[in-house]
Image 1 (tube, helix red, strand yellow):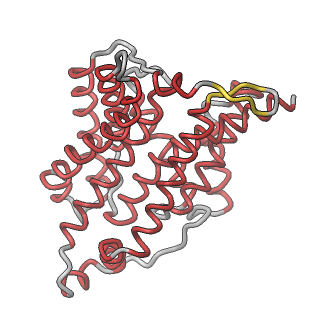
Image 2 (tube, helix red, strand yellow):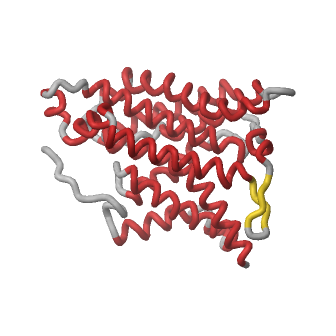
Length: 299
């Protein structure tokens, strides 16, 4: 029983690391741009497929080590390519509009990107476990666990969290973004290019979603529909944390990851609904999320 709990804990932390990177991008986009981005899951899927494709292309007698840079490069390529294009030509037209219109537009983008994904990568399952296999296994409490999931995934999530904290608290660009969050009109009067801030924000959120997919790709087979699965659970995490509160997203991702892993090992029938049970329990007690607060709306 102790080993089962240990295994569930390790699985939960590894899973929470990926969930955090996807959900924090979603939270960032909503917190700054006030856009409910349903298409976020497609960036996760494209990041995963791109990482597998690039990793397999680089694999060879002396190319195995390049599978690790491929994970990062694939995420950056997806975010830098798609993020600015979608923000500039589509999302910029609906800023300040009703959330229903935002949902319809981003859902349309999601459907288009799902078809693009199938056209580019096909519908057959794809898998590249080279990054996982290269690091091997380590013994923890009498069980053997992959070093990739034990070290790489949690450390990547920690680095992302520290980098975001530093960016928003210490850099000029981060402080400009904070100003736009507080008051868009005042930011424009002060000479801040708010449109440029929105473009950078959406690109950053896209990179984070793609990075989550890229880092998760060595641990699972990629099939059509993974984007939809990721966006649903990401919404549950962001809603539980409080919309726009990206620091709290880390805590909520750990809670959801651990609960889901425990259900997988101890109560399998509940594993698929565990994240939503957590969300429901949290929102019944704190309607604005664990870290959310009521906000005054300008009308």
